[in-house]
Length: 307
Length: 316
Image (cartoon, rainbow over all chains, first blue to last red; front, side, top):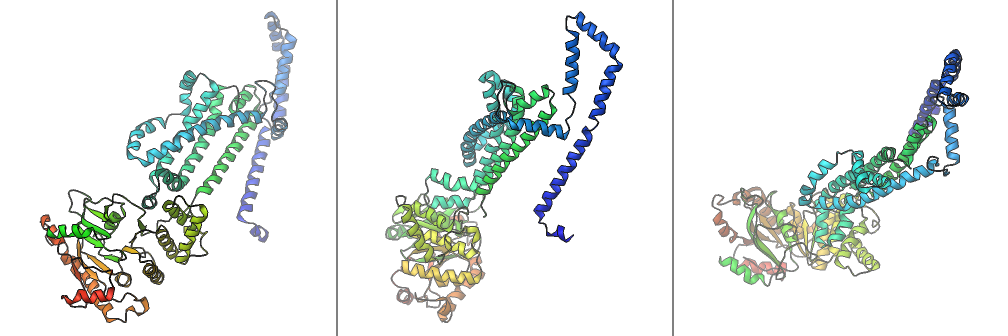
């Protein structure tokens, strides 16, 4: 008891997390254990139905296919696709992927780092454009009641549209699948930033604005030195929400547009029926998302002020 | 009417001249205050006392240029003011420091606005002088959240002084401070103002504070339709101090007069002809100078002139 009490809250929490992870792994392992009996059952089943198999082989011959090759192919498949991977298989696959993260053997065989890079570049591009649009526009909307009233109906209508609903329009007008994905990221990340910037700017304490006014601070300097730092915590919160949404949406968008990116990779591995790789990319998406969020948490800590 | 033209002709010589100020927030309600006229001479320290809701803060905000009056205008050095300006420094009630900047940064922000051509070094040196003046040396790198209420208000005062304004406007600067801190900062403000001959317009609820600091105390009747009922001339010697001030019998005469006004007469004086707004103009003309404790006779101004020095000019 005394030993446990010596631990800090953090280390206790870390221990609990590790225990949970171990438990999950054990459940996973247990759930994937009966793989071998199933496999043997499958082989016995194939043995039991050898008559049917022979019939099928004959049918294949009738259809102009080599019966031996077909049977071999089926056998090879049953060896390859063994259902849900066990933790060990997953670790093996993950290690294989991590050993060559930058390999590039053509469009359908690129390393995960390359795929992630594609996704991150798309997110960065769409997000940057959204930032450049949302923050200045949010400033205007937050500062001017007229601008707020004029823009508000558009924001209210456009905000709840699923970003993927824009995809056909983007594909038709932009005519480039990659640029369409960037557009989708732009459209999904613009709203939280726009709304939060407007909200933060409109909520700047009147006293602070009055200080700037009595000091005859020029408008641009006032915007940069008073309004921006005052609204920064709210703006960064919007940026953080936007980044979270952008990272959610890029996976779905890349599944649609295909070609490159971690979303495409995930879907491609599903088509390959490589669940280990699917799992691996799911985990990777989560880790990258967490890292992005941590970066924004850091930024948020930097701009937060105590009043 | 004759008073008005009189105010305009002599307004040319006054430092600040406030003429016929009226503020109405809603058309269907009577104005908060109306036909407020007064003048401030260079080097004067004016305090305004009145109950909440009589529009003291609004008058100060109009002087600062932060609010527009419904009627009337403010003339500073023969120029009508149209907005806030660096010639008027404002100390806000809740200090209004920018919380993401350090003490130094807050003051440098103001100094840079006043002297945009200065180098970083010049700005820092200028700011340091005023930080030292309010006794905050050593706290330059602190953020406002790390300061006590009194220290925050000192930064606010230093910031207002650092732009070297022609007039200082203080809106109940010590309202949120405890009595001890308030006393210390009052002393400092008094010291600074006597050495710099700063013109000050200050709102306060504290009668003792007004007597300690000011040359003239403007008494406002209760709102709505508040007006400046009387202007009490502080007849205490200019070198008064907080420790000894209350030994002077004159202190109590002034104090009693002010307290009496606040608890009793401010109510009686308010809306004397509430249902007849036209007569407000006449009421405004009745603002008079009072010399509590001294005879309200012709001898009084002479006595005051002796006591308070040449800064004082009768305006009634």
